[in-house]
Image (cartoon, rainbow, N blue to C red; front, side, top):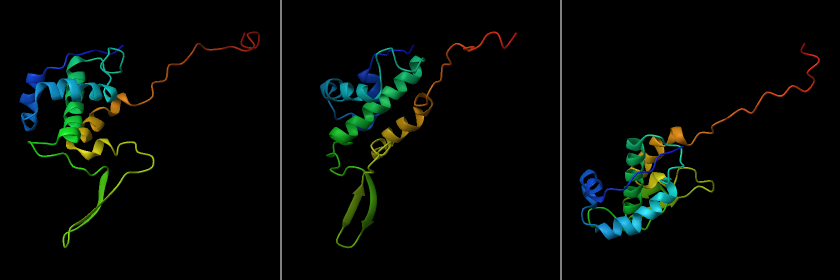
Length: 141
């Protein structure tokens, strides 16, 4: 059973001052619901400690805010995916987004990369064995 935390806009802006130009409405009504699609915050997720859940949720909100609104008042980048090559003379940039994107979307911002790394223990399969079955109980006596 997981833990559910309450998002604190004031604390979040103190941790991520590069988003101070965003309004509370933009963050709470715009980015937070999208962040909760990626970072489950309903009490049924795999994270059981409130501090870890808060950190993961804050990182995901920062990731979404950078993608949607940009950083420090600058517009967000129109590029999607990983920058695969760049030239300087006559400026050329190309990006790639793998056909099987596992972490490519997260790696577009430092906050997404930190979220991806920090959430690794919670993305593993948990095996719960069933009861031991004895097909012929007379053989094991």
